[in-house]
Image (cartoon, rainbow, N blue to C red; front, side, top):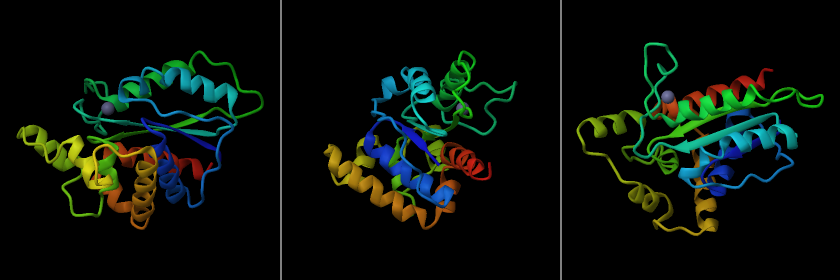
Length: 212
Ligand SMILES: [Zn+2]
């Protein structure tokens, strides 16, 4: 299956391809289009253009979009219900951008529509890479930290734990991200349990592509 990956860094995109391989049971095929990584401030603002570009100009069947949560609202499986406000949840923002963009697209030449899976890493994707390593990562721990105003870690600490430096080269970042994703594949359930809304929802969506 041809899948494009869009997130803040190409290192993370490489790790996401590994996660998709674990979820689908076979490696995703690359799409005919290079997707650059963009910083957190632009990953969402460029999403409409990226989606449109991948839709019209590539052979992708799926697009996986992952954003870091940082200090914004965590995603909840309740979001989307009429009585629940999602605040500044980037997961829901990404979803809304995709839905809005889809409405203005013409059918793809002889190809099915482009499926999208969205992920939200809490607070940053490095927390995903630490699953199974005895750190307090996970949506529950982060939520408790927010409520007590004692966050389990900073973004910089997360980077040091994963890369041994908070300023990794792109090469080191890619090497570590891919290695951790490979390790986590051995027990996908652990990451889906630790990050049910941000990773679990994405995995569920990708898994649904397999049966189609
Ligand atoms: Zn949300």
